[in-house]
Image (tube, rainbow, N blue to C red; front, side, top):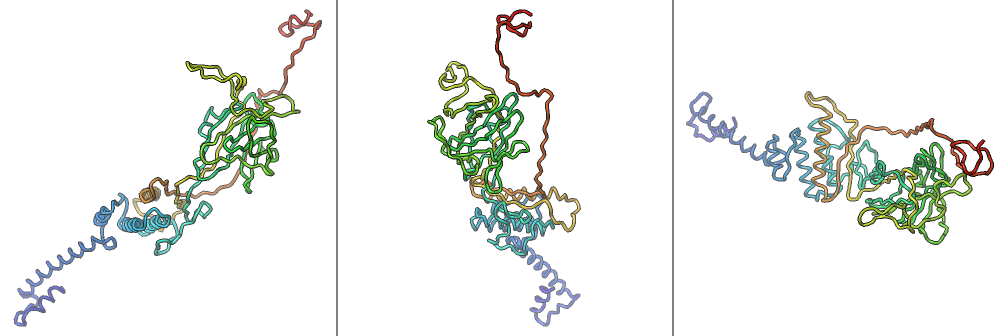
Length: 442
């Protein structure tokens, strides 16, 4: 309409372009063609800008210039927000903490606009460098958090299945791959048919020693844990055995006896970074019924269980560096909390998500899984090479510490006895019981 009026106004007065005339119909035809051409040019212009592109096809063509493709379930607004955030993060270095947080929060903002799902209370405009997520594992999980060097609980791989059964003088290598030394925790359990007196654990790498002044019977479990003050606590069943734990440093195996100064408060064995060699043996108790599994001295570190030479190379133990082979004395379960190197986690609450209305044909659980898969892929693309960066969905959870123990009495269990054999001449004899050469028939 405006095009036709502008062209009619430029004609001489003698040419009438009033409605219904041939000239007016001609001008309308030309004006319509020019208007359609202007609209096409405007669409071409808008399709070259992220903020003005009107459909997913044109946005995908812009994203292809940066190697970013839309997911099959993404809409226009969500992909637009992700595209702008990723491009801005790349221009700012991408691998920094602020850049990664900015990308994740912008994507969540796009989810609010596209899917009407609210994971976090976000401001209308998210500025770069604005820290909305908490820092560290102590931050509230409900507002999201970024954790650098996350803690992972690791167990000794060798103590798996039957490998948990350990003989006296057994040595074990544990590799601490964390960024700092870590306390060694776990449990020592007595095995069938044995009583282990004063179980001792030594870290030959650091020279620390830890022992419990007690006798560990079959089925009893000595558990180590950390107290609120970082000190070592121990329990045997329901009983607190923290006062029976001893620890010390600068232990030298097999050397001339030198008393180890005990710590004022028992401390856990610390695993240094790298490979640590642990050593287990029972020390023994004096003035106690039975000798139990006792060494009664500090053995040499190269003392081992005796074994016969086998194979063409004759792999066996040396006679002067071995004991008669003993059965397994305990079952070990050792673990430690390791702070991972070159790693971070972005933890987002996913247990409670505000959804004003449910979209027909859309499953909220599937949408949540798709979203966190997308976030993980984006972070994996932007993180630095060699860094383990992940996005984790935190479920709605409530923790309450409970302790429950049960004691099972075996009908085959008998009282501990000690068999004594002796002979007296001239006493009455019983068949199949008394030695023939030390008695007379009754």
